[in-house]
Image 1: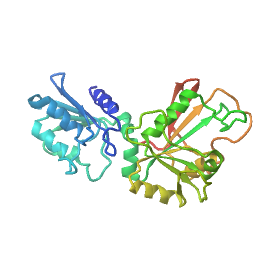
Image 2: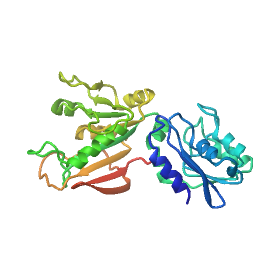
Image 3: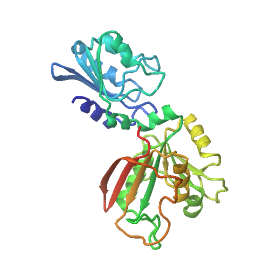
Image 4: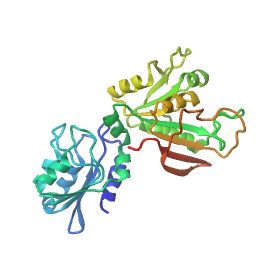
Length: 312
């Protein structure tokens, strides 16, 4: 399906238009790609980029796009207007727009006779998972990350780090991709963490560095203290533009967020070692938490397990 090409374009441009969602679009006529594009840093939408590239060849063509074309005047005119002006006959899109201000493109296009197909690709939703959660739940998309031994322990008596160098580098890459990184008060006081992204590219700058705790913090810890109820703090962060939050705290913070059902995705770096004793990464919870989309990948000598608590 050519929508897979639209997804490739969006993935390659991921984060370029932050805080707006990243979208990919492809125009196909007579089996040939005649135009393609992704959301630009200026906010110019992917559909407009692809249609401009196609020019007159867009008339009678099919437009494949990762997100439902918008139907409202925002920083740019509606993409539905551009599609109709170009004479596109068919639109195939991979994810519905969750933003009530911009949604409705599908209905508008259908109403004027455009053939529209919604294919519901998980990958298209996951591409903008943080933005989707921010829009629909008015809180950041929360990722809980932990490094554990094969038996689930979060510390080893003779090692500072459980995971290997490749995993540690990936964590810094993750920090560079999110809006905020957080630990709990116990981790802040015990480890004096910096929580910044080091030795990796940071095109969006450093993330905000937070501590969820009633405080106080020890001298020398240059982190932002958040003391209120978790739900209130997340709403406040969302209002300040924080779409994604990476939790790097210990079991106490993990349990608090999981018990409040505020974790959306779990990342576990599993090292090839048995701890034998010590704290596990999640203590007792009020009830089980079912996970979906479980995936694994090799990261150096470690295995990264990824799963969703709440799919985007």
